[in-house]
Length: 299
Image (cartoon, rainbow, N blue to C red; front, side, top):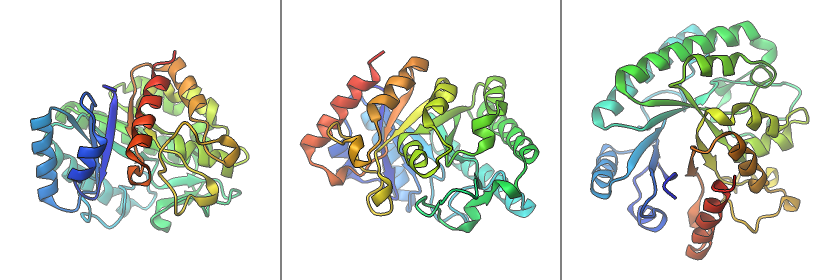
């Protein structure tokens, strides 16, 4: 369990920390915290209880007009504002404490296949996506190269690991090798694979197969985001805990298969339980932890 993290979204919830965190866990991933005093309480707890704090960007909510920085926007004003926003926020973070990693959604805006029905994918607003018919491969390469160069420089300067979490995956990431080439060229930059996202895209997109994605990118993973989900109730039942009794025949992800494949390529990743633990009992939560511990150690 030394590779496990729990998440705090919006607030530092001390009741959740008491219930969900276990001695020996690696740490906490914090995201969109509303109040400065909650950030201070989280940092204080990390010192007292000796755990690491990681950031699911943004750490602070309400500091910008969009949910995520749109590094790769072809609107030059949005792009410029995004980089300035990130510069300010990561400077704040690294002056406040020493994050193990800072995670960003990638790419943003998300590049979508217009032939797929994305109505069940959760976007904050229309600014978060663009269709691939409006965004060329050359643009994608140029913008990604610029992002990698920037994050690599900031990682060295401020001593953190930049992590890119795949949002919906586009054909440029799936069919080409530019991303693996850049990950090899800039080894300080790592990835996050989200099992629930991969599963949902697998159901929604007939041309998408998540398992070759795991084979291609798992070795670059710093962290796995773990929850389960189904297309039929993704809007109101997302981030459901990954429990061993959930059946693929009922529409749930095959979590065993994902971990079995990830383990073939990577034995050092961390696991963030990105789930709504309030939806299950204490016994179910403990069973979840024990089961995932077994899955992560099966090579």
